[in-house]
Amino acid sequence: MMDNEISHDQITRFLAGDEFNSRNLWLNVKSTIREIETDDACLIFDDTIQEKAWTDENDIMCWHFDHCKGRNVRGVNILNALYYSGEVSIPVAFEIVSKPILFSDLKTRQVKRASEVTKNEMMRNIISTCLANQLKFRFILMDTWFVSQENFEFIVKRKKDFIAALKDNRLVATNLEDKHQGRFIRVSDVVLSDKQSVQGYLRGYEKEVLLVRRIFTNKDGSTIAMTLVCSDTTLNGDQVATLYQKRWKVEEFHKSLKSNAALSKSPTKTIKTQANHIFMAIYAVFKLECLKIKHHLNHFAMRAKLFIRANQMAYLELQKLKGA
Image (tube, rainbow, N blue to C red):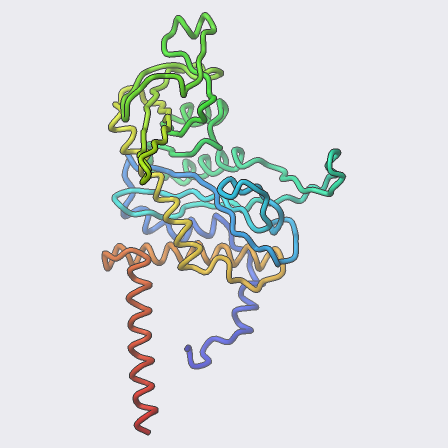
């Protein structure tokens, strides 16, 4: 396609050269961020697992528990921080989960791996880096896996607000007296309608929070309830629900990362080349977002447009070959 301007060996040497990390990503997205950032923007955290069942195991290519599949899978686990402002989603940081510690499971007698830092610690480190980079944002959006007293206190101490989904068994008190008396109930037992809010207290967290119920109806008519917690008690249920809905942007980012940026299609064998491929895939999604800003087409619409154009060119070339 490039008429031999770029060779296969050049790509191989490039991936095996410098180590690209979250700092390199920030340096490349910084100028675009400065054009679209706002004080009320959201910083969204979520991790994704790219399964690579047949790739040799190492510190980053190893076993992780996939909450979507409900089982352990072999692959890479990436924690992403997505900045969302003005309908634009830009990755500003990422961390690849590494598990260099080997240990023997006492029950199964199998050798397993462990990480030196947790994903919660990674998230807090990323937030600190974003603040050091003077990134403007107000809300941090996250799912149930990042709900902890330490994370909440860390965020509020830095004068930011959090919105997160709670597990149904999380204990809450709906007033100060119940909190002091130790009368906590499961959050799922709090009676609320869709987008209705109530102020209360989470067990283990001192500050007052806002609890908001979301109720979703499935195609078969069944319903699913989810409770959100927000540190800003001046908001109402509609506002919190609208803000948390933006968390879906990180799911769209992960889908584009896997479908449009070929995250899984890497023949790399070493930790450095695998990590560099992950960086380049994330950077490719950022470039797609830049094209989205310019042409007002989402990533998949641009892919379809390119695919149709490529088929048209191939068909014209075929006609030329027939006429030759």
